[in-house]
Amino acid sequence: MEPLFVIKIGGNIIDDENNLSAFLKNFAAIKSKKILIHGGGKIATKIGDKLGIESKYIDGRRITDEATIDLVTMVYGGLVNKKIVAKLQALHCNAIGLTGADANIIPATKRPVTKEGIDFGFVGDVNSGQMAVDSWQVLLQNKFTPVVAPLTHDGKGQILNTNADTIASTIATALSKLYDVRLIYCFEKKGVLENVNDENSAIPLITKEIYQQLKSDNKLFDGILPKIDNAFAAIDSGVKEVLIGHAHDLLQNVTQQTTGTLIKGS
Amino acid sequence: MEPLFVIKIGGNIIDDENNLSAFLKNFAAIKSKKILIHGGGKIATKIGDKLGIESKYIDGRRITDEATIDLVTMVYGGLVNKKIVAKLQALHCNAIGLTGADANIIPATKRPVTKEGIDFGFVGDVNSGQMAVDSWQVLLQNKFTPVVAPLTHDGKGQILNTNADTIASTIATALSKLYDVRLIYCFEKKGVLENVNDENSAIPLITKEIYQQLKSDNKLFDGILPKIDNAFAAIDSGVKEVLIGHAHDLLQNVTQQTTGTLIKGS
Picture 1 (cartoon, one colour):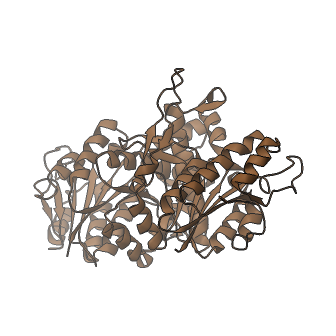
Picture 2 (picture 1 turned 90 degrees about the vertical axis):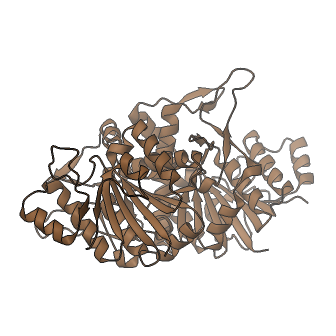
């Protein structure tokens, strides 16, 4: 099958003009088919502050009220997304900026109120079984490069805020029936670190066996566990491999894979 | 050739929730291929005021400085565009929201500083000869309904603010080689009025001959002249006919054409 790169970038790249330019240059240089998923970055909070939109949290998780969903629709779906698209076009990459509502590419359901009564507001959980694979195919086969904001929709007219990591793994999974998908999480560290204080301690390979060992040795910091679990879930659903590491190193070596942490089933 | 409706709506529809819902219901019901171009509406000014972005004008024309282009990219390209897309999806219309940067569908050039030294800032004049007809074809043939924000790009990474009427006529013209294009301008009046104070005085048909007569009789108010000139320019470039009128009436009768002002070459 033809290779497909599904690449997720977070706020640390989006918030820094130089980081973003360097990343996009590397991204545009990838010759294979590719999809970019971006997070939001601090700019949404900055603009929200100016607009008097208060960030609300319950148990450390952000609540997306009506003012906030409008804010992130503007900032993620408009400002951040279209700036990336325009920059990629300048690099001769035929980017097309989308949310999950566009062409219904990521259908989702508003998260139900928890049994403890917590309402996260306009947050969407992706309906992974209903991904419009046909629409993705049309875009990819016609040499468009989708640039996806972390927004989905409920099919009833409501935009929903959705975690970008989850969107990336869901897209990767849905398209693994048609492509050899490599899922890449670009973040601020050089990979999954064996020693969180040593930037050069990236673990080159994590299989399920190695993961069990690392966990029982308490070698992994808590923050990375959901990312690795997400990665294995994607692999169990057909994604070929997952790469986690620093944006700059990763994409320069994306085909040789000499850097970052590679996650494989076995 | 297959029919294609290119429909432009302005702020008076976008700013009113009920107007917008009624319009989108009629729009979604059009069975032919269709493209929607929307203006900005007052919401950009409202949000700009809250963000402390001052609207600057020279000779009555708005200047698009850096803060303003970011503002309209957010509001037109994000908030307004994606809300329309989500609402159309709920009406089972497979909308895909785009700016001119996406898939390079509307290449433009930053307007040069005038000889009087006026710099309009980040305003784009469409490069009508370079319209990516292939990309439009891919979208339309695959049954996507493009929803276009009034934004273009310069191909060098810069988003540009562009008049929605002009975008509509440029798209209509570019696609008239492939489709029987009917261009529809929805606005707040029932058509081109013979008596500006009488809402029921819409002129049913304007040909070039009739237009000359109306102008020499001083029967048209100044504001409508650019719209009619724009319409004739589109017709001279291959668009079949142009319809101007009130959103609600027009789309209910879009196939019978029993309302509004029809503009035809002869």
